Image (cartoon, rainbow, N blue to C red; front, side, top):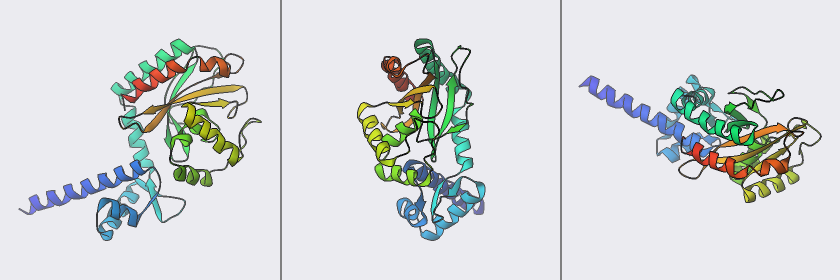
Length: 255
């Protein structure tokens, strides 16, 4: 009987921990202990115990404001390992390979990770000059096509919170560092449904990104192509929009 009670207690605790992690991941921004307790309908003491345990394990972390909790490095690693499972990764690679064969340039699959953009997968073009960024690498959010795309499709309060925590570093002469100009760019991206990097991250390199949506129509990733401007202009990249959008729809089915 004692073992049965212990199993039920342990299962309940595990379920609550998973619900807490799911809530944080879905919210997409830091949450206070009171907010977590309220959302999960748990006593504050129980929520405190769960957050303490998950903090120790690295599944959650504290935000810039110590009162708020966010997804931690252990959870991010688990998510990346899950997405990189052999079967799913193979199917994902097929999607990216098809884009490369159509566009003739390197294609990436990225996701939002905190206040940056993380590469989940990529397929290289066969050109001798190309930019190589390994899976798991992070790039800035304010000056990349994928990053600006993620910022454009998220709620304004969450976007403003991210912009307050990052430095709008000028990576090139084309990097947009003015908040007002960036917000106009976000409105344009949200309206047209895709984003450009006009040599804003690396001199001489352009990129174009489209959103990857899940079954609930939420933006969970982006498919992007990038190339030297001498080989692919913004205008030429735009001609491949339908191919990228078709690939994004296929990728969304794999999430």
